[in-house]
Picture 1 (cartoon, rainbow, N blue to C red):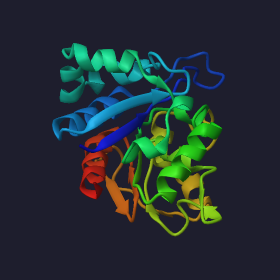
Picture 2: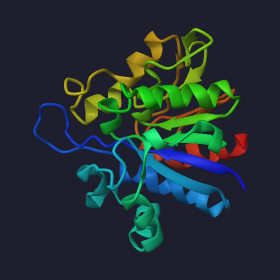
Picture 3: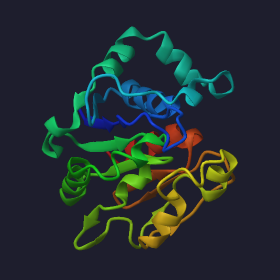
Length: 224
């Protein structure tokens, strides 16, 4: 049985706005069920462990999805989410791959988290695939492989500048995911705003936005 590590943010403050953020619920729920339904063993981790913060906007009526509805009726999945393990306690050798869910939260904690950076490098260096969706490709900001940014020369995607503009957070986030991937040497691509779009390039899987969560998870499964 394949073993997947899912990583979520523990950060709940949206910059200096006074508003809450966290992980985007669809970006956990959809991949969780893709993996669960495929019979994969799932471990969920976050920097602080325990219940990670759900971005309240992700649970608004207009953002509901079938996987979120399923999650809200699934006591077992809710228990898994409420009891995430501390990121510091996990080791890449115990898993076959890692999947990072987005939401704005990761841009403040996981991007700078030394354990997360080392973990991604350990997975990738061991020949294991790494996946991230929406804002989560930001976690590659400091990650290197053979002395170069992990995304250098790779086809990648992530939350588009135009999508960040649409949610009016361009001046709030530490940096723009699209711009950062390009500055690191990634060959950034995108579909229409809010459309499902995922890319596989070698062992790297990236998804553009919340709607890409299922496609990114399915793409990761194909590499396993």
